[in-house]
Length: 287
Image (cartoon, rainbow, N blue to C red; front, side, top):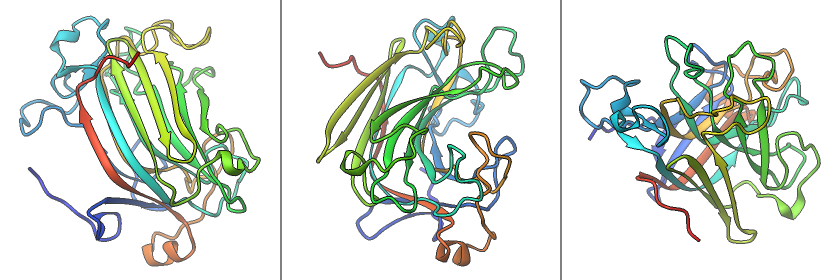
């Protein structure tokens, strides 16, 4: 078992819970302008002879051709957490991603060839927390990305509210939302060909949703959704307050210097603390 901590961005607090933090400005992956402190599911375990993107390190839906060659058919991610902080400043506050953080997701592997109609590296689910700086409560929602090429104008996120608003909502959700520091949980259970979602908060109760991963979400989606993809879970903090401007949904032009002490003092970061984070085999939905 490998061990790693970082005193600023990834560590255990005094209660033994995992703290993830990501400033607005820091090193990013080549395909993103957003910083992150996340864990990526590695189904291969210690067997590094299996490549990161190989079937033996990822899961697929049951209907996928060759699904028996994958490390798993489906899977489950369970998390309990509090969001401690989201970035308080945005140069373009109307960008939907402003003031938000992704705290759990399924990512699809990007293939060298997309002739099959899959392998675009999109995300069938991203779980968000978003709170405007002048609001007492924030919102929890999830987005499904239509599984289309990057240059297709219909490649958009479809946003579903859970506690409070979806990512288009600008009004204060009030007590229908979740405060910073208020605990909630989520479960993403991909069983056979369907993604089953459960969200829970002690004050607001339980919310359940489901979505097929082999039928398009609407008329503009890939008709087979993510039925031909390789997938994996990720959890932690994926700060959506990019320092890149340009508006639209994604580029909020959030300030940041790259100096952690200064950026933290200015509120230019996202942070969440997880008291539970478990990946396991999928289970049949209850009821």
